Length: 147
Image 1 (tube, one colour):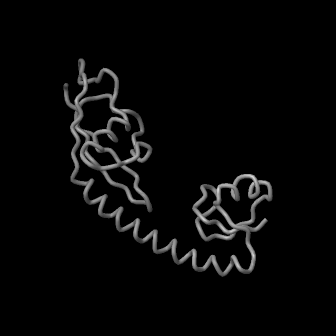
Image 2 (cartoon, rainbow, N blue to C red):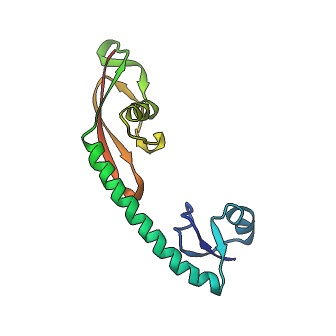
Image 3 (tube, rainbow, N blue to C red):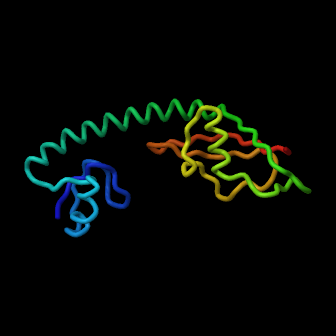
């Protein structure tokens, strides 16, 4: 079944793409969630308009993301934790802790966008990356200190 993607669908394509998908996948998953519309002549004309709108929205999100990257690049968080011998923490500092601290500072960042290969388990200064929309990445400094 040929369909036109209304929204970006992971592992399938971006909004505006015309894709060939299994009929059951389209009927049972994509169509009920309004992620696609069936392909026909009239929908093909609508797709051109849709692509223009998507392009404008992406550019706007990218500009907003650039501003957020610039603002976050100057952010330095200080998180207090219980510290034992050799500067090791009792517990760890996770993406949730960092997201909560950013929220207190006025930045609404989803914890899933904070890239930590593993939780922070030592006191000191650490660089943490935040993946934003449109492929943008911001780096913040997280300083873990003795509470």
